[in-house]
Image (cartoon, rainbow, N blue to C red; front, side, top):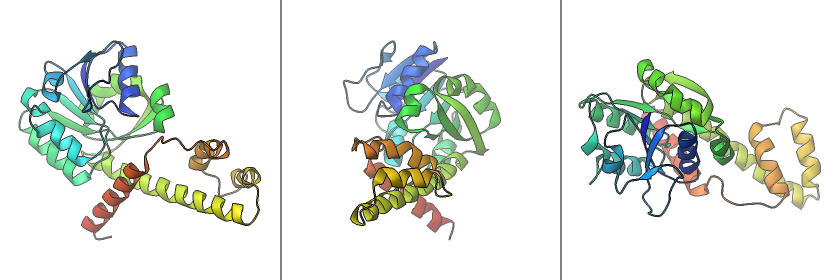
Length: 248
């Protein structure tokens, strides 16, 4: 398929690379110049990247970035034609997703929210989980692309529901990480060995996939950013905003 992939960050670069490896015709664009994907063309703007493509795929940092890429100067909107699909793997506000979908629908373009879980390792290995919201015919057309980048898709409902479910997931992940970090800190102050504690946690009901993934990094004192804290803070704010809208 002819794909424009916009956003070559921690997740996006690996995702676009896997699309190329799967034989898709990929054009890439990134806000910060200089990033490339082997085997993909590089565009000077989102509008140029989207020209003549079947699918525009985004993976950027926040709601404002998605809106700017779609509708700002030299944005994707300039190159939209009937029958195209926009798929967004960013984590953004569900209400904004619905608004963007309504705006492009006027041009005969379908919009699917496709946020992911699986972290950097999942992006690199092509084993991401896609949390999807959108019409089933559009999702069906995207399945070859999902297959190139991930191992499973979960359709949560209509457009916007994928983003809603992603916020719910990240709320849980944030709370587990916080509990894990505070527990380790208290353990250290009480003289409990971190390695022994993690063995105990993994043998008990406290066990978590989040802890299983993160514990080896912590034990090796490897604190390189795989998912920057500023983005988790952004996602918690999105969750709070969504909760306020829902009066919960």
